[in-house]
Amino acid sequence: MISRRQTLRFLSTAALGTSLATAALAQQVTLLNVSYDPTRELYVEYNAAFTKHWKTKTGQDVTVKQSHGGSGKQARSIIDGLDADVATLALAGDTDALHSNGNWIPKDWQKRLPLNSSPYTSTIVLVTRAGNPKNIKDWDDLIRPDVKVITPNPKTSGGARWNYLAAWEFAKRKYGGDDKAKDFVAKLYNNVPVLDTGARGSTITFSQRNQGDVLVAWENEAYLLEKEFGNKVDFIYPSLSILAEPAVTLVDKNVDKKGTRAVAEEYLKFLYSEEAQDIIGKNFYRPTSAKAQAKYAKQLPKINLFKLDDAFGGWDKATKIHFADGGSFDQIYTKK
Image 1: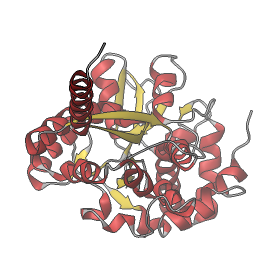
Image 2: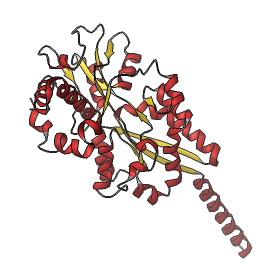
Image 3: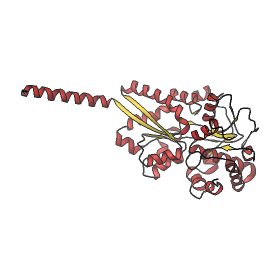
Image 4: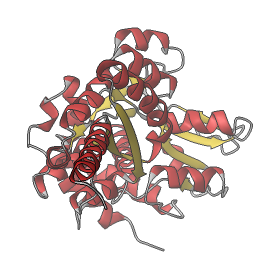
């Protein structure tokens, strides 16, 4: 027979165990970073640095999970319920969709962090087979009938939109006007045998499936390919390219629901720290701090870049004209 004293002792022990378990859980937090294709390697290294930083600062353990895919598809996944704490997508236009489709973030989300919430930048380059057998030097060569071009689908990939607009602006400046640019880009996409949904998929198509003569790619992807397949690929900077400014944000609805706002805010702010900026440069993205820029100046040279806002009037306008249903891309691209 169990006495009343034994019962109370048992209940007290159980309560203590529950309290300790709750306290242990309180010392742990998990974040989900929903990002685009080519940031995998960057965020693996960054997440390790951040978890150490957060543990030192607060004593709390944090686990950061990563989700990668075409930027447009990733935005749609969040809108459809993917439980992201932060979104680090390829372009602000995809992130804007989180506001306009469900008010997941405020309209002025880009004002919450420095540099319009872009802690790093990048650009678009041309990757060729080793020795550049097709003698590709600039965007002009991508419309030659003997050249096959690998680039992802701008309907699903943020990187693909940067590619598309870089080619458009080159042609507009060289040949004069949007009509000539449209003809040029139509010829370019006529040379594209397959449209992958994301930038990493196109990288695999080019490097592992050996399709195409030239890959239009993020600068960091080109460096990663050179690192992995150094004897099989080369890459060149075209005479004109676009300043790509990937932006980052909290997903407000989710962090408030999950109680992760404080750690998610710190996760994004830490991207601007010198430690993180060094990791960014090391992973072939262009850092925004002067110190890291100086360190990686040889690796990431100054080139002729234009800004999207100057050439296309911002993402809202560019999306409506070029990538919305019935826009210029739909008009020029015929699926084979």
